[in-house]
Picture 1 (tube, rainbow, N blue to C red):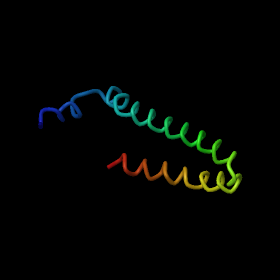
Picture 2: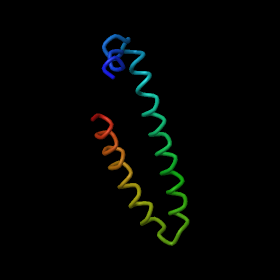
Picture 3: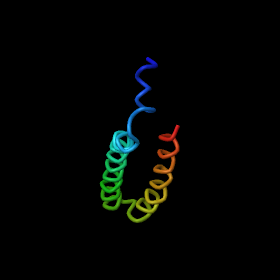
Amino acid sequence: MENNNKYLGKEKVAKLLLKFSIPCIVSLLISSLYNIVDQIFIGNSELGFLGNAATSIVFPITIIAVAFFMVQ
């Protein structure tokens, strides 16, 4: 098991950055697309602009929470 983690000290930083950043970027893009679709459905419902305001406030908080949990 310890041999699997040695590549973090031996690989080039650019390669490691690319390897670990792509899944993060993809997950954030999917989350953003989900938020856009959610805004469309909420905007067309009876909640209207109040529902859009609520999701507009919560989405950045969610992204910040995800960022903190990805660091650990």
